[in-house]
Image (tube, rainbow, N blue to C red; front, top):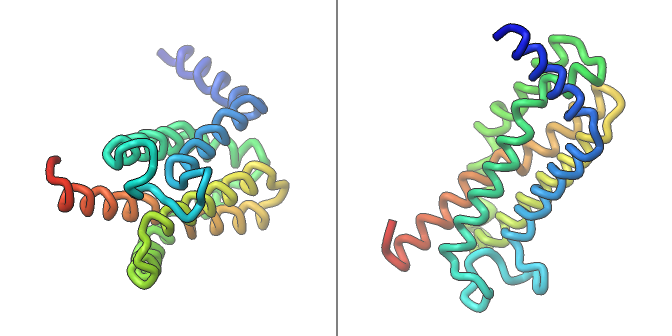
Length: 178
């Protein structure tokens, strides 16, 4: 078991430092953004009636892609930060940004969605902002840049789940079902 864990750890390290890993992650992030915003017309968002896929299918696709992108990347963040030469406390600080922002940002973005009256558009903004933060994060060379990139990512990314849940509940209320 111990040798298997070492092999998995070495494989994960090689995968993290591989350009194909980042390309795959960025492809997933791009797919999440495309699911949130209709690429042909950015003013039409996730739950617009004229969009080619039903709202239920778009919600399912967004949920799957969002949690897939998180599940693929989140376990590797500590190792990625260590591969950049960050110390244990620096890694801990970077990993703690998400939970701190998650306690503050969803109510703020919810307020923005209520004022605009367009939660689908706000979800698109959140997805695009989180993706930009993610791209910046994978191109950092110092702890300070990683800190800024993680704050940028967390500003948008920590509110996506709350916003998509709001859209899903509105859809169920309007259309019925579960």
